[in-house]
Amino acid sequence: MPELSERELAVLALEAQQWRTAGAKEQAIRERLDISSTRYYQLLNGLLDRQEALAHDPVLVNRLRRVREAKRAQR
Image 1 (cartoon, rainbow, N blue to C red):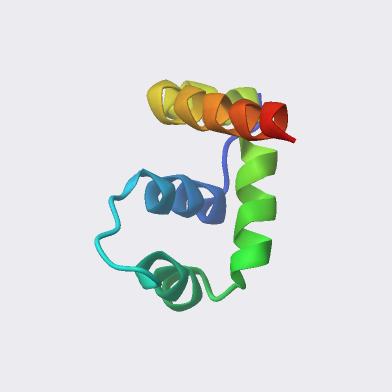
Image 2: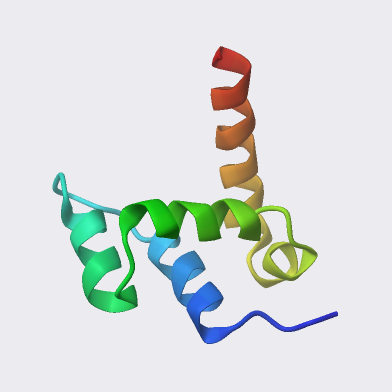
């Protein structure tokens, strides 16, 4: 099984954080990862489908999968 890259680990770590103010997460994405919010969410969505991400942080990945499925069900 391939390992997660440093960037992928950083995406998961950023997603695990709690954000107190509006825009703080987007600012952290730009500053820490040097990518747009759109690209961040593309990477995150791809990670949610990978077994390596699930093995790395099963609680986070399963929670995010449930949120994603709930949003899809609303559409």
